[in-house]
Length: 87
Image 1: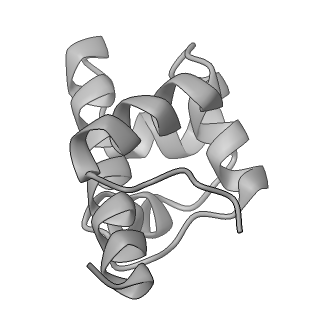
Image 2 (image 1 turned 180 degrees about the vertical axis):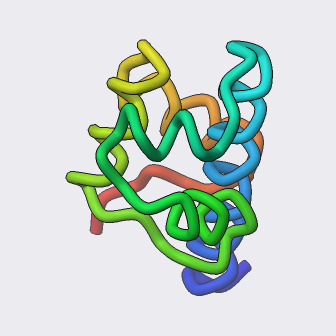
């Protein structure tokens, strides 16, 4: 699997993870955007994996969802098949 494919899979898995946590918390995209001080359209793009998150945006979203950014990323990584090997 190419690195590009791994990165795409990780982005998709992270998008699904964010959407799932938001849904479990019963929070709308609009409410999440408000809590994270981000635009609702951006949240939508992230959840559909059309936009890659910055570290800052990941931290804001995680805080708004009351979860650690590392937890969101680790759960996404488990589901994506991405390898965390540093090169």
